[in-house]
Image (cartoon, rainbow, N blue to C red):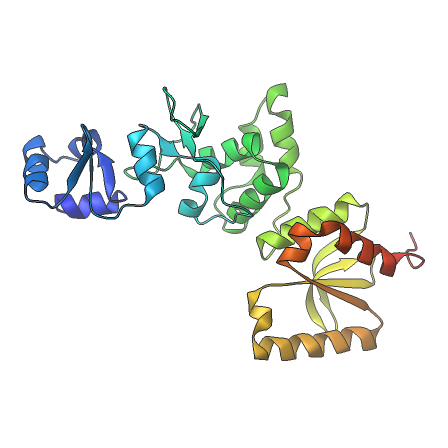
Length: 273
């Protein structure tokens, strides 16, 4: 692999020390800069044209993307993009960034991205519980971590809150919004089953108190074929004796109280437990 190809592989931006460690010479780096194949962003940092801004910021800070900022690079679900950059740095600071310290696994070398384990551990300590749970659930569903693995790397009282977030994760969601909905219903003390296969209906997102089906609609539910299938499932559910409610992303995230009120309106008077 030549120098420019390797730099592209590294995220199109890198410290010259990274390139030297990969076996390229200082002379080859100088020649590539002189030929216009890459540019120096500052002493010790070079880049190709058009690198991703978050990767540039990480390299310039002599750190790696971590926590919420590393989630897209690990193909993890997120509810919200972070307002500030989250960086894993051994030392120093970066203006406006959230700085994380401590690492248990190597970074995604040569890209300036913290390893998956560090990304999740710092998210569990740093982010709101629901946001962290969404990221962990995504990694769990991909088979890239386990709850026990993460739990054992969160020892002591100081990590008690982070370990508690792991109790919110069960690996049953099909989307990040389903994680939010599951936690919302269970926080209300509602008996909540997920991904239940009902005879004559098929799999439903949620079955509350054994009789109320709640479906969470994503963008695919706007497609004509899916609308037709959803209509048929709703009719089958009603004919079988189930009640049905449907909600979208904005309902669950931005108007959860309305969702809770409507769910209880259906459940009230029929819950037998």
